[in-house]
Image (cartoon, rainbow over all chains, first blue to last red; front, side, top):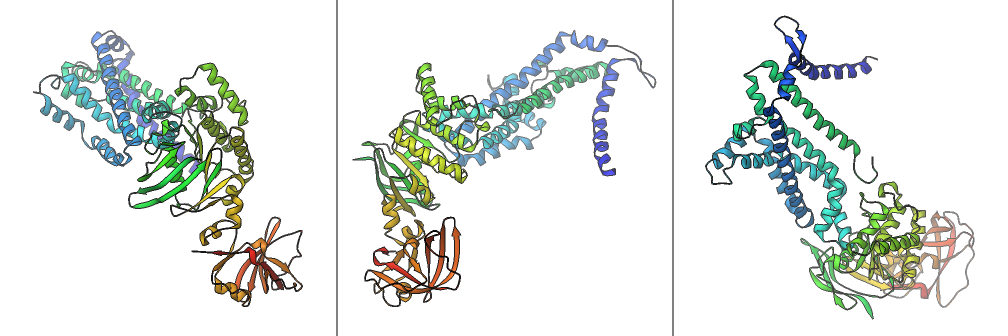
Length: 263
Length: 339
């Protein structure tokens, strides 16, 4: 009996540990004056303020764009690279793996400062801050995208399927993109959306590279910290809600499983 | 006239040579089996014919055309893989339609061809199912349909039945053979199972260590193996050195060649057998007996020489272990072997 109750109790404690800060942040964002032990009154004026502020909505849109675009680009590049490796040069896979996992070990601030130092005075388009930011985010997302594609390729036995498609008349390129890619798309989509949620929450890289050139939601939040604690709490909860939505999409896609009737 | 010619084909993987000057010819319309133990090069040879491996040297001719360096998709060859390799994201219909769509055939023709081929492989009604919803045997039939719907010049089958249970395998063996005859295909089948090869083939090419050890019809290969390897791989031959056989027959055998004797040609009797000028008679003791369904296999000891004898249950009395019996082997059934 004791052993049975222990597991759920631990889970409950962990959930409380994770949820309580969010709950209190939300309460702080909707509270009236909170100078005593408990808040006086409920108000949604901070939410009204941020959602009626064009700057906030624009920053959300910019965040979405700068999170999605690098992930899409990175996915295309990695898929093309994995096609070459799978179809022609399997021996290159371990070198690809090393290259793609290096960004795991490099802090965001190091990447950002290195990129800035190297390209800040470069001629256009290399010196363009948005381009720098997009390319840097491609590198940040690279390990997640690569691992997702790699795991998906391993699970579908890509080499055998390519051979079967070739025998049926397809070139290696057609075989990879007409047979393999549709099969691995759920796995690729999951890793892409995870990458989007990681980039969505980034502040260091975007603030260092783009700052006021391209104000994202995280930069907006940073500025709001100096204006009002309740305002910034409202922004935090709004951003959390959006990230939760992305995560739910990932969860939903994962539950749909592989194609081919395997639900 | 050879339809497929393999000329001095060599293939190496890094430092390991898998095919060594392999030569063989295949006539049109024949069902040919490449038989051999694991690692002998039979699958590599098949993959070279398909274009999935590039030979190190040598040439492959198909209907007079050199296809050695031709890409697989241009060879007009069908192939059924051991792991089926059906596309998991496509239904049965879509899997079979894949090659037809690449040929840019009209939709109506595609639908007609698929309906016909599903009838041939007895899979009508399964069009909308995915491979994960099919049994192993059904998947293999879809893989077969997907290959033959394109009317290939040659159909290659790489151990397609090895992952299937024995009873279903026998059923599929005869079905593949029927389809081969019905569609007048030229088929090349790879297996390590000599029983399967015997059942299905017009011609068997026995491979050993990257070379063709012996070629012939199943009967020729079974009754007349030329080498120790062939005799050891096909059937359950007794492989006896000249000295051992001489000892078993107590000097009656005076030859110097090693001998291969099929166990079913060893006649046994509890009573003494009459002398025959064209047979070897000798006495032996029953060391063991093992039932193989309708066949009883005896292990005999004849003057220190061990050999096996197979008898049908209905033909012979059962001998107890330790019993002294008379054995007879016709001289014509003692095949001299080399190697």
